[in-house]
Length: 242
Image 1 (cartoon, rainbow, N blue to C red):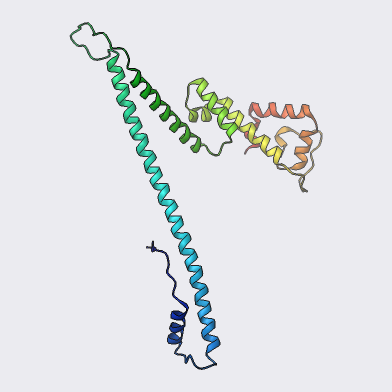
Image 2 (cartoon, one colour; image 1 turned 90 degrees about the vertical axis):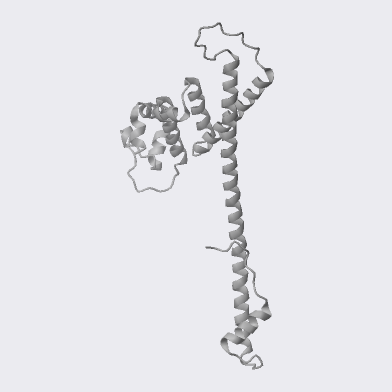
């Protein structure tokens, strides 16, 4: 197990005495002095490196410890928010006269909603929604903001989850696939290539977006680009992305 305490280096004199002792040297002998000083310097340099490493190791452990504490705190806060939300929803349900009435007696008149309780409920619902939104954005951090916002808007419009929309909605899937193709086209460079140059009769399924000559051939005709995008929307993107 690694030591959680910072490394404490020895002093120069202590090191010199240790070198003399370990190698059984006479410190007054002029012939031994260069070796002693060289050994002392080497030990001092090694200790300096070890001290620096020890500091960085402790800093890394501290950062990790804080991250773990924050994660546990977030989990606790979410659990408390959920508990309070459940309690407020239960109180609201009871106040609206939704209690069981097995005897068939007339339900008592419901009391007017408490504005303070309603305000607390709205605040908690907002906090829960914000937490869910933050966690969801982190889960799909590989998407750009533009991609995430577009799919999120589509999911909300259809009343479905973000995951379901991203995986099963054809509009969302086609949007992401088209974005990938456009990024690959935009990222293509004019570097020399040993691949065959395209001819005027090149088919869309033969297009290699990694070949700068193919990309140049596509961009040379706006109508060809439109035709290529239409071909991708009808299933050609699956072939290109393989």
